[in-house]
Image (cartoon, rainbow, N blue to C red; front, side, top):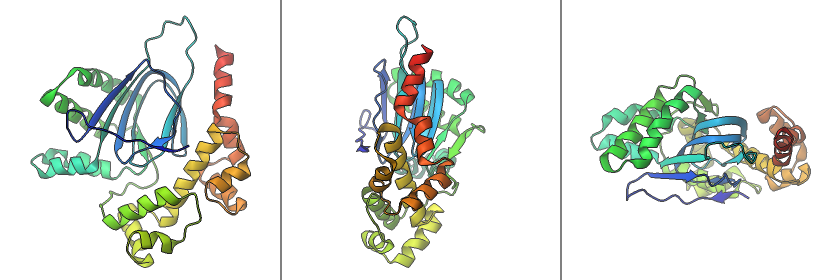
Amino acid sequence: MLTREFVGQTFGQNWHYVRLYDEGVPFIWHYHPEFELTLSRNITGTRYLGGDVQSFQEVDFVLIAPNQAHTWHALPVAPGEGKAPQQIQVIFFTLDWLKALVGSGLPELLAFSDWVAGVRDGVVFSRACSEMAIPLFDKLHEARNIERLCIVLTIFDALLRDVDARRLGSSNKAYVRDHRVELALNYLQKEYCRAIRLEDVADAAATSSATLKRLFRERLGMSVTDVLLQLRIGHACHLLVSTNMPVRLVAEASGYVNQANFFKQFSDRRGLSPAEFRRRHHLHNRLTRAELSL
């Protein structure tokens, strides 16, 4: 089940920092309207970010876009291995906060703000960037007041410099905020599992269908259909890896009336059939392989 996570604030600031220390990594598909910058350490497993599924070893450093469904699955640690404790550190922030800082006397953040605005799904950072971030996150956990904010901004600056980062999604176009697009995206996020007409989305955004199509192209570099399919395929990936639901029911639960369309669209976007995607990435299969290797 996809869960809406509510993010708080740190010391009343418009961003939030949390650390999970040796508490395991629960498999919970969730989303939230904030950007999420997550550094995972001493964890081996699989990251599920929308429809992108990747294994990682020991260190994982990613930026997750707002409202993008995501979760992690950590492989079990064999008893007596004496490994360092698992640790996850997260910085939540919003684009509005960055823009407010830029407009209030910190124009040095403009380049980073523009870069963040162009993140459609997420960014996976290189191992070199991850290693560089570790001591900064260690300092962040202990720091307070101005020092804490300075460390956060230093981490942000490092993200811009990672030339080997892997950007998820096809669009590099910066998103110029529009309340009609926001209303349409909120509607799609809530209703994507049922039949939706363009007119329904336009009504939710209080605009015409023609205007909405133009706004999506101009602001997002995507069509309304592109966004809808992204949400549906992401939900299908979640069901395929976390349940044993028959594929035909996965299609129905993801908003597909026509199974042939589901198979074609899934294969086009993931490069695998739904059944092959399940065989490769299902949690039970990954756990079994991990247990056999211990």
